[in-house]
Length: 195
Image (cartoon, rainbow, N blue to C red; front, side, top):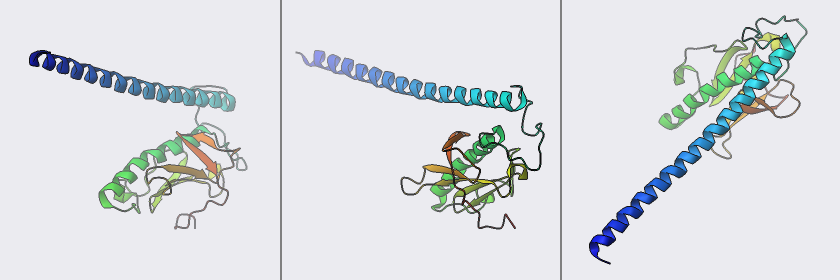
C-alpha cells in the first residue's frame, strides 16, 4: 500500500468515526428529549385530570385561587398549586448551585443569588427562604398550619443531587413539580419565618 493510499484510508476512517460519534450523540440527545417530553405530557395530563376532578374543568382558569377554600380543608398534596410551588423552588436550585461553584459556600439568603427579599413566584407560596443551601417554600395558610416544602442538596452522594421533603400529608413518595417529594411530618424551620 502506498503512502498516498494509506493517508486516504486514514482520512476516510477518521471521517467515518466523526460521523459515527455525531450519530450516537444525536441519538442520545433525541432519547433524552423524548423522555423529557413524555414526562412533560404525563405531568400535563395529571394536572388536567386533577383540575377536572376538583373543579369539573380542565380550563387553565381553574386554579387554586378560583377554588372555594373552607377554613378546615387542607388541599391534597398532588394539588396543582403545590406542584407549581415545587417547580418554582426548582428554578432556584440552579442559582444555588452556581453560587456554590463561584463562592465555595452555600448561599444564606435569596439576595445572595440575585432575588429580592421575600420574592414570591407562585400562588401557593407565601415566602421562600434559603438556609445554608436548603431552599424552603412556605405555603399559604389554606394548605394548613406551618406547611412547607424543603429542597436540599444531598451531600452524601453529590452536592448537586437534591431531595424534596414536605410536611404535607402524602400517601408515599409523590411526584410534584418535577421532583419526587417525601413526607416528613417532623419537618420544621428553625429560622425566623414562623413566629
